[in-house]
Image 1 (cartoon, rainbow, N blue to C red):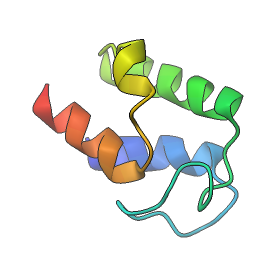
Image 2 (cartoon, helix red, strand yellow; image 1 turned 135 degrees about the horizontal axis):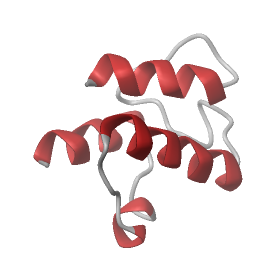
Image 3 (cartoon, rainbow, N blue to C red; image 1 turned 30 degrees about the vertical axis):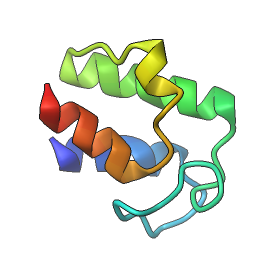
Length: 71
């Protein structure tokens, strides 16, 4: 699961280094549109749904991992 998410993140990230502490906007330089597209890709790939109220609280790669792990 984490590897799938990481591969999707690599498609959008503007860096080669991604770790759980990476901030989506400051470290990976993702725009809000790119984050929304990335989340849609994760949802499609993993056949899950990330509610908007959760999405607004996601700031780091680790936040994504934690949410998906909790499902």
